[in-house]
Length: 293
Image (cartoon, rainbow, N blue to C red):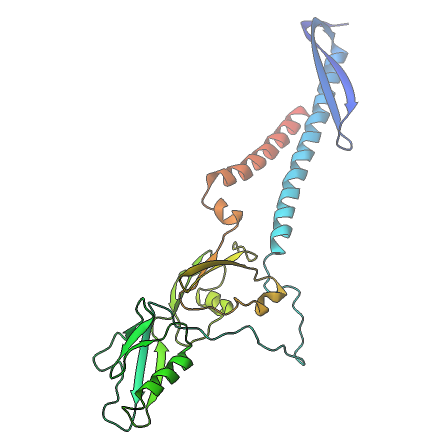
């Protein structure tokens, strides 16, 4: 019988927390070790390395599977929406925009009198609504328009011009109607709105749609009305999204689309390092298993 003089390794086998695995506890003692004990140590080490390799592969596959399956569930818009073309639902969540301070109005007046005017004659920039909520209309003077819809402001000015003009007709437009879309979209920008009605879906379409890494359940709408600012979360995956009172946007509204961690991983090295470490450990386990065989 051959003997080797070194620190003896006494092996104890216990069932581990994983099916089919063996946890080897090593106790180091200074005494002689036989060849058979060394062989047993090598065999158990080989088995341990196989189990480590299998465990790393399972963890890597599970991580990739969870990430791919878990993230897709949040990608589609308008989930669980009831499709019913025969009974369309009424649109009752739209309210006309109201004029606010700092708005720039285009005011055009036509009449049978030569005194009629529009903002192309001397007022190319339009009529600025001042901090008092007023604009200065020729002949009439200061007119308060804040809080009024465009139709209400037209009727008010038309009534005020009636003593001076014959059958006046007033047309008002908000010249600086704009919305901002920023965050995880294809084309973040400030977008002018030609009409008086625009929805969140239209605004996102103007911005080139959400990126695949955008959070669809927590889109932030920032709105300023009457000197107050509101922060409203929107969930574009919800079937109730179309019925939200904030589905239609107002002048100067801001949409912010938050990116998820996948977006951050493209610019942050720690996330890439995490994936490389998992891959590296798997490769090392494969190499060690091959060497022990």
